[in-house]
Image 1 (cartoon, one colour):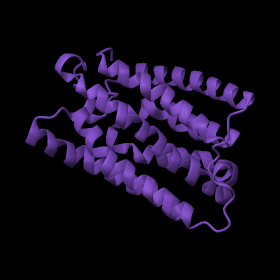
Image 2 (cartoon, one colour):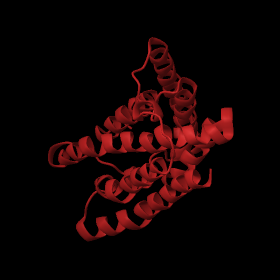
Image 3 (cartoon, helix red, strand yellow):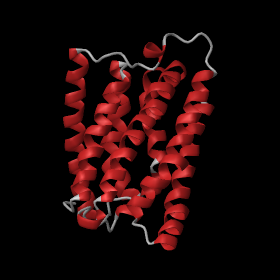
Image 4 (cartoon, one colour):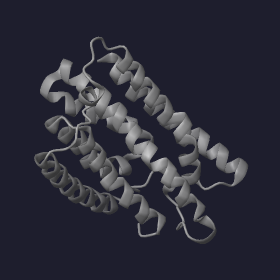
Amino acid sequence: MFPDALVFVGGAILVGGVVHVGIPALSAATGMDGMAAWMLLSVPLVFTPIIVAGLLLLRSEPDRPPWVVRLRLQGPSKQDWAWGLMGLLGVGVGSGVMFLVCNQAGLDTNPPFARHLQPMTGERLWMFFVWLVYWPINILGENLAWRAIILPRMEQRLGRTAWAWNAALWGVFHTAFGLGNLLVLLPSLLGVPFVSQKRKNTWLAVLLHAGLSGPGFVALALGLV
C-alpha cells in the first residue's frame, strides 16, 4: 500500500506548496486573484503529477484486465444510478450540515485562495472560462488516480475497509485547504470512495465529486457564499 499512499501524500505536499508558496508569489508578482492563480498553477503542478504517478502505478501491474474493466469505467446500471443519486443527496445534505456547524464555530469553509473571492462578473468573467478548463481536469484527474487506479489496488490489500483508507488519504490531500474546508468536505471524503467501492464504478465517483464541486464553485463565483 505504500506506493499508493505516497501518491496521496506527495499530492498533499504539492497542494501545500501551491497554496502557501506558489499562489502568494504569483499574486504578489502579477496582482492575480488567488482563485485564478490556483487554477493556473494546480493543473501543471498538482493534477498532472498525480495523473502521471497513477499511470505509472497502473503500468507496473502485471496481467491487467481490459482497461474499461480495470479502471471500472463500464456504463452505470440502473442500480448504480440509484446509488449515485442517493449518494449525491446524502453528501449534499451532509455538506450543508457541516457548513452550518463551521459557521457556528467561526471556521472559514473556503480554502485560503478563495476566502475573499469576488463575483466573477464583468472584467473578472475570464476566470469563469479558466475554470471551465480547470474543472474537468481536476475532477477526472483525481478520480482517475484515487478511484480508478488506487482504490482497486487498496481493495486487494485492505479488503472491505479500503474505502475508509482512501477517504482518510484523500483528506490528507486537502489539509492545506484548512480545517473548515476539510469539515465541509467530510461527507464527500467519505461518500465518494464508499459508493465507488460499493458499486465498483468510477463514474459514480465522478458524479458525486462533480455534482457537488461544480455547483459549489458557481455559488462562489456568483458571490452567493
